[in-house]
Length: 151
Length: 181
View 1 (cartoon, chains in turn red, orange):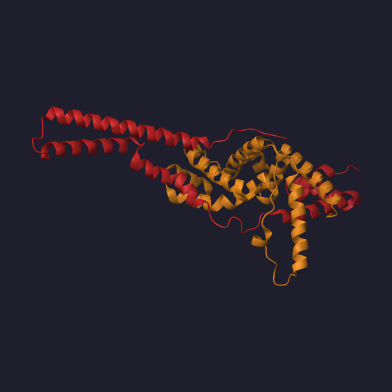
View 2 (tube, each protein chain N blue to C red):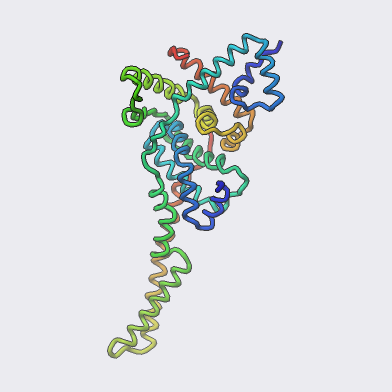
């Protein structure tokens, strides 16, 4: 009679196919040696319950931190830069503000001067925004771990 | 709502879907990482990193009903990476006074004995080689089927069967030596 020691763990875990499960069950009914092994395997399986992490851990959800690093970051990116639309929007705002200043200020200057200063401001904003965006991207990807295996 | 649908919605930028996903799985991921790292604090850090990766990879996620394996694969990679850097597994006992208090019908001495038994079993699990521990924890504590463990660990079903069998054999020796079996 061939013993089924190598299948007992999978049998206890209910991981065998229907036919295999039945074959092992039939064998266990006739073989005291394998039946004892099965009993021991079930005891050990039950004993492992003691190693369960208590339900009370964690005390609080990690969602606030995760939110801040995902959707929270997206919102701040919208405010401070990163997306094409936000950059365009801020550049447009800077352009409108420049034009308004040129019109409202006494001796408002020539239109050439307004356009030059506005253009400078917009470029400066965009450049700064790009820097912010890149920093955020790098930071997010620093958290990525490499794949691998050990023993 | 199933995990695949939540992932699709997360990729579309729906914060509520991602929040639901995090809250559904964070306990399981944390428990898995505590077993892998033996440190609640480090595990809590990696829970965050795990979900940041889930978020970053949401657009590339292929909805095939294998979210659980995919999630634990990310967590497992992060844990193994941390272990490689650390080399030595630290096992920090949970603060049982805070988390497990004696039941109404349980005396202080009985509670202490129970806690000692728990510590022995946890320590025995912690001494297993990383891959055996990972397979066992995913199967025994996270309820993954062998097929799902295989997908999470990038191995085969017979490979998982062998890892778990070896883990159980080692635990038997370890705990029998301490008179728990």
